[in-house]
Amino acid sequence: MRSLKRGFTLIELIVGIVLLAVALTGILGLLINQAPQAVDPVQQVRAAQLAQRLSGEILQKSFDEQSDHNGGRYRCGETLNGQFYGDCSCPVGLACTQRPPAPAITGWQPSVYGPDGGERAPYTFNDVDDYQTSAICAKGWVEVSCFNGDWIDAAFFTQTDSKVASDEYRNYQVRIAVTPNNLFGSPGLKVESIGKRIDLQVRLPDQSVLDFSFYRGNY
Image 1 (cartoon, rainbow, N blue to C red):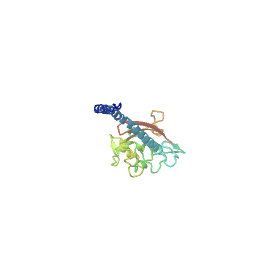
Image 2 (tube, rainbow, N blue to C red):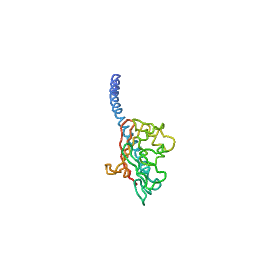
Image 3 (cartoon, rainbow, N blue to C red):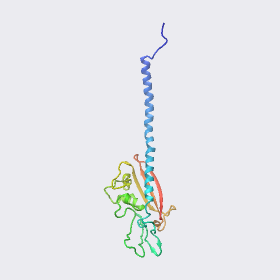
Image 4 (cartoon, rainbow, N blue to C red):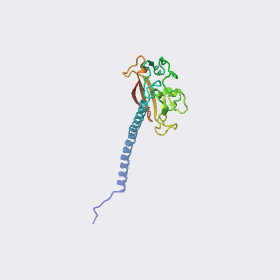
């Protein structure tokens, strides 16, 4: 009596393997094409975290080099109890006349946007415009990696002491531009004493750029 059970022939197995291989090739190709898109959100989240970290740090600093760094008892560009404390720092590349204090204050020196004397690392910066990357790159510090004139390796801004944490944001770069602003969108007379707009850009490892902007008032 013949058995009703029947298996696959060798030809059928070979055909099945070939069809399976073709199907898997298509699926793997689709997954490979989707891989870069899956990485993009991860990089964007990291960039947003870096921007949030830097913006919080910048906004904690004094408004200006000429501000009172010990409690904000007076503001640059302000007259209080008969004492004019001197104009705020002059923006880089813009016409600006900085009036000195009247009566004179011992030790007062004119200043411009960018790090001031003795400030060579972010943890030593004490006012908002110290973070202007074009001014930092112009100083030619050997420990700062600048790209295209005003892009700086993000590791420079994430250090907490004299040691740079180069692995924390590897291949991320930062550009920061600080400009005077009257906080209503357009500049005006002595606007450098009113407010500052900070434009923060983060360049991702894939070379795309995320833009962030925020303001700091003179208080």
